[in-house]
Image 1 (cartoon, helix red, strand yellow):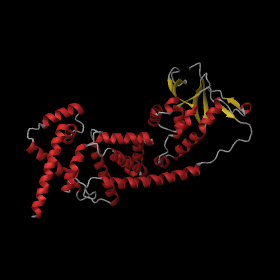
Image 2: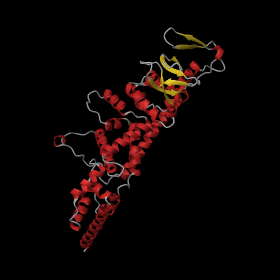
Image 3: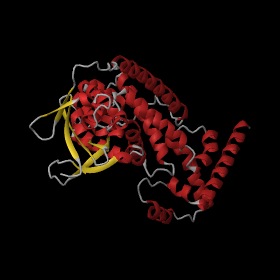
Image 4: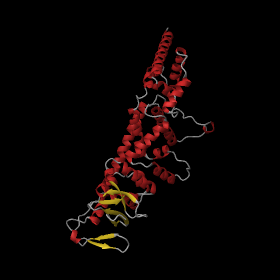
Length: 398
């Protein structure tokens, strides 16, 4: 054990928290002991360790010390006591946690409100009543208990009612945001009617779909349309890269641990062997609201990153194209390209694109968008198709 550190095991609500004081008087708290005391499993502990080290502010209070765990020379992640409340406050209390593990939630709140004071008292004491605090040492290790004489201690306010009130307001806010995000998604979605029948396998045609299931299918279809649309932007390579960005963003911003959410979903649905992230999201109204909001923001942010989409808009509107991904419009333009420039070698263009960007998410549309010369030819073909459509309309009026 590091001889320069004073290491102690401090009891807090029946848990043992290990911390140390360095020669400068600074107190360092073992993160693993805090997490285990709260009741986190190994996956959550690993996740918290990573978040602490990545956080711009909290990472400034990180240091590795030998606290005598296993091999005495092994250094473990420690956090400056002054940074502990900020770290604990950033651990999100999700609706799933409140529903599935209320004991852990209550314990986490206790840690957020009181743990720092107990640890500070163990090492630094109370400046006003230092002489009145009597440390009582137990035989095992350095663990201590602090006994206070019968003095008038300040009453700690009961925040439980206020927390319930705040959580209820947050739930309502997320619900309203979710409704707004859904409305925005419907407004900006491709002009494919969302209540169209969802393609099903032949053997499923006779299956009766309940209203609840239909709502889920509609939401999933609408979401996939947005993801597919985003995958065409220069920001992403394919739909998997869009989803990964979404999931990572929600994890970092809201503290949602997807593996944990899936495990809890499986416990609630023991008859389901394979769980998709979409299933988990849709079942939790608050989580769905967060997801829909994030997706709507992304759709707005990256909607104009694909130049081909902008070039195609006049034609799509002209022929009132409601086909999936505007297939009819694109076929007309590519047919015109074959007429006006039959020497375009799509095989070689694909090879060049794949060598530069990789094969993930390859599409002819991306090849055109990444090649200024080809994009100019494409735009010319669009204008020619528009002229043909104008002639058709003029002939129809005659």
